Length: 98
Image (cartoon, rainbow, N blue to C red; front, top):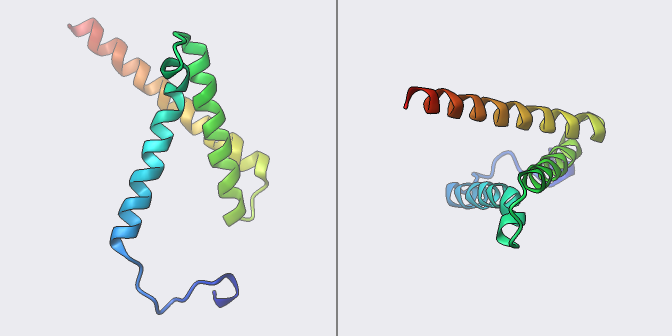
């Protein structure tokens, strides 16, 4: 562990963990909104920006694992697509009830 600069005896800061987690979630939430913030009303552009963000996030996780970059990136994109599909289906169910 010392080779990569991690001291197992050091206690991590809960505030730093909370702050970095908040920042990463905020950035991830803003990525699909970029086309709308720029004045475009295209759902496809929003999905493309979100997909690109998922690919980058997945690719970055490969740096911390032994997996190939393409594998980690496509896995992240697949899980993101599943979350989008589930959210869409829940929306359809709620709309059908209301």
